[in-house]
Image 1 (cartoon, helix red, strand yellow):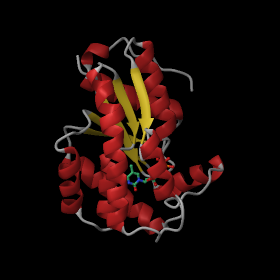
Image 2: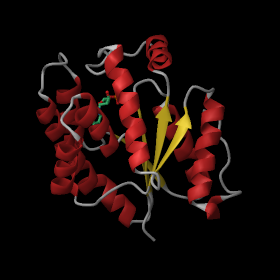
Image 3: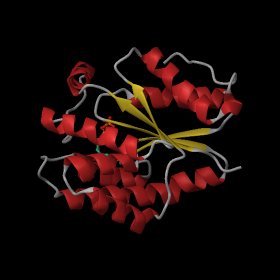
Length: 218
Ligand code: TYD
């Protein structure tokens, strides 16, 4: 049977990466072979594009160039890693996917919904996640997390608070447009509480997993 494709989306500092690792562990422990990956990146070629797109000043690329770079990376990722894994029956969790292009390039960088949808169709046809978990968090809380993590500030983290507020609204709109695919979790909670919300969403979508998914320590 084909594997399931699950994506994690949201603004910066929402805790997606930690939660993606926890979910991958829970699924693997439940006997489901699971692959954890991320965007932009995930394959050798896509990681090289990631370096190009995430470094430098925020005006390094136009919005459209940025969108095309994201989709060049995404096509490599889907063709070489995601689709073959799903066909082998492996479940794939990606830390970000196409909704990030819609939120960042479509809304925040103002390319518009239609242009992003057109590029998606041209590159990936109707390929889409089976389930998307959206991490919703006030950008002020998120920036505090990014600061305390001591992460290197990427080109995107350095954007203004307005940009991050726009992004939050963008993701909320995308979730409203795709209610059957996207489940929003309240990310302004301790790690365990967010993990519980995610496992509940997984069980709601895959009732057969009820009783098989255990909470893990990070
Ligand atoms: P990353 O350090 O992985 O951020 P995070 O931990 O918040 O996921 O950097 C990825 C950045 O790339 C992030 O700012 C969002 C941005 N991005 C886009 O603008 N468009 C896209 O299509 C994708 C996948 C990411």
